[in-house]
Image 1 (cartoon, rainbow, N blue to C red):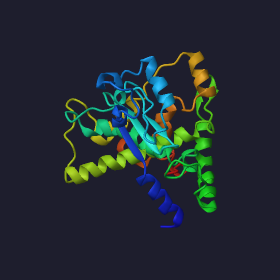
Image 2 (cartoon, rainbow, N blue to C red):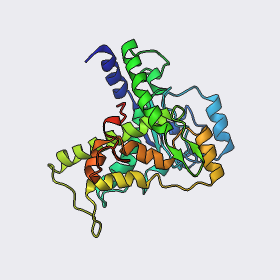
Image 3 (tube, one colour):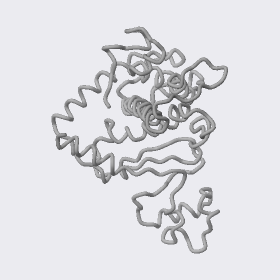
Image 4 (cartoon, rainbow, N blue to C red):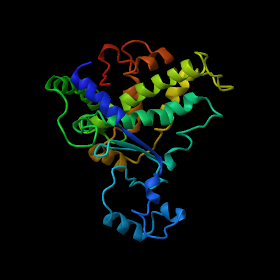
Length: 281
């Protein structure tokens, strides 16, 4: 393991994960005297923002409404955040459903946010969230060379709804995170099968002719289902940080050999890019 890889490892271990909302919000150093637990989660109070503006910066500060249905990575604090709104179906299915569904949804999102720490922007920050060129020149050049594959791949996707091609360079960071998160979550799922079930597959869902590996990928696609008007589609392509949902799904799975095994995709087909597959992490 070279010095750069060791630094990557330290940075990953230093990442903070915040679920739902943080305990620091109850601190009397941040909240006004007499603030109750009910008031803590009431982000609509005008006074709340004034309190935050007057307070000192907090490294693990939670500046997201708990009801938000989204997840976030902050490079400046090396922290990933999962509001309570994201920890519901169809992202998190609980223990009464096959774990493949949760790993394919919230699991991929967890991996996606972690991967942001090593995308084309997050890689510029060190483990403490400081903007610092900590990569070796060789590692940086190899990284940039590998990104060309992904930029070209996504730039070739044409979104009929928008009448435009995806901007592969603009969406690079999110595409890196989608591809990395998918791989990380699938590895985590298979590790759970091996460690917690001694390699025995989960029971299949009744009346559905899909394996659990297939359900993992279907769950990933399910949470990206969306509908756009042409005007919104064009705006998404022109100024959005993400690729259109259908290409977030097809782009990532077509690069992943485990998807191709699960669905028996023939080599060099639309969903199996084969030797042209792109991979950063």
